[in-house]
Length: 66
Image (cartoon, rainbow, N blue to C red; front, side, top):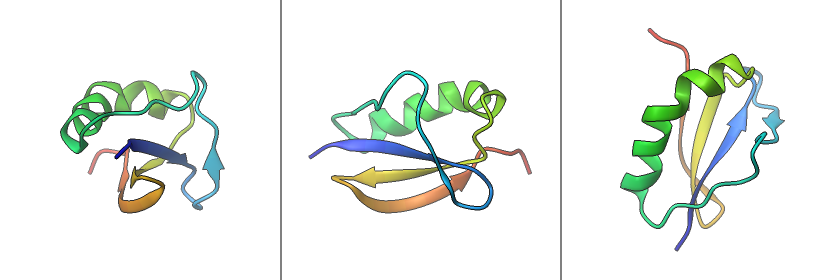
Protein backbone atom coordinates (compact mmCIF):
# COMPACT_ATOMS: atom_id res chain seq x y z
CA UNK A 1 0.00 0.00 0.00
CA UNK A 2 1.44 3.36 -1.03
CA UNK A 3 0.32 6.79 0.10
CA UNK A 4 1.04 9.80 -2.10
CA UNK A 5 -0.10 13.40 -2.54
CA UNK A 6 -1.55 14.88 -5.72
CA UNK A 7 -0.97 18.62 -5.92
CA UNK A 8 -3.60 20.86 -7.49
CA UNK A 9 -4.42 24.47 -8.35
CA UNK A 10 -7.64 25.96 -6.94
CA UNK A 11 -9.53 24.87 -10.08
CA UNK A 12 -8.50 21.23 -9.55
CA UNK A 13 -5.89 21.11 -12.31
CA UNK A 14 -2.96 18.89 -11.37
CA UNK A 15 0.47 20.39 -10.71
CA UNK A 16 3.53 18.16 -11.14
CA UNK A 17 5.65 18.06 -7.97
CA UNK A 18 8.98 19.86 -8.31
CA UNK A 19 10.98 17.15 -6.54
CA UNK A 20 9.16 14.16 -8.01
CA UNK A 21 6.43 12.03 -6.46
CA UNK A 22 7.01 11.07 -2.83
CA UNK A 23 5.62 7.79 -1.50
CA UNK A 24 4.88 7.13 2.15
CA UNK A 25 4.41 3.77 3.89
CA UNK A 26 1.48 4.96 6.04
CA UNK A 27 -1.24 7.60 6.02
CA UNK A 28 0.26 9.08 9.19
CA UNK A 29 3.65 9.50 7.51
CA UNK A 30 2.04 11.25 4.54
CA UNK A 31 0.03 13.56 6.81
CA UNK A 32 3.07 14.40 8.94
CA UNK A 33 5.02 15.29 5.81
CA UNK A 34 2.31 17.60 4.45
CA UNK A 35 2.09 19.23 7.88
CA UNK A 36 5.76 20.13 7.61
CA UNK A 37 5.74 21.02 3.90
CA UNK A 38 2.46 22.81 3.15
CA UNK A 39 3.90 26.33 3.36
CA UNK A 40 6.60 25.58 0.77
CA UNK A 41 4.03 23.93 -1.48
CA UNK A 42 1.82 27.02 -1.21
CA UNK A 43 4.79 29.23 -2.12
CA UNK A 44 5.37 26.96 -5.14
CA UNK A 45 1.86 27.78 -6.40
CA UNK A 46 -0.04 24.74 -5.14
CA UNK A 47 -3.48 25.52 -3.67
CA UNK A 48 -4.67 22.12 -2.50
CA UNK A 49 -3.49 18.55 -2.05
CA UNK A 50 -5.32 15.25 -2.40
CA UNK A 51 -4.18 12.28 -0.34
CA UNK A 52 -4.10 9.13 -2.46
CA UNK A 53 -4.04 5.53 -1.29
CA UNK A 54 -2.74 3.36 -4.14
CA UNK A 55 -3.91 6.03 -6.60
CA UNK A 56 -7.44 6.48 -5.17
CA UNK A 57 -8.29 9.81 -3.54
CA UNK A 58 -9.02 9.60 0.19
CA UNK A 59 -9.57 13.33 0.71
CA UNK A 60 -8.58 16.75 -0.63
CA UNK A 61 -7.48 19.66 1.54
CA UNK A 62 -6.78 23.32 0.92
CA UNK A 63 -3.30 24.59 1.75
CA UNK A 64 -4.66 28.08 2.41
CA UNK A 65 -5.27 29.10 6.00
CA UNK A 66 -8.81 29.65 7.17
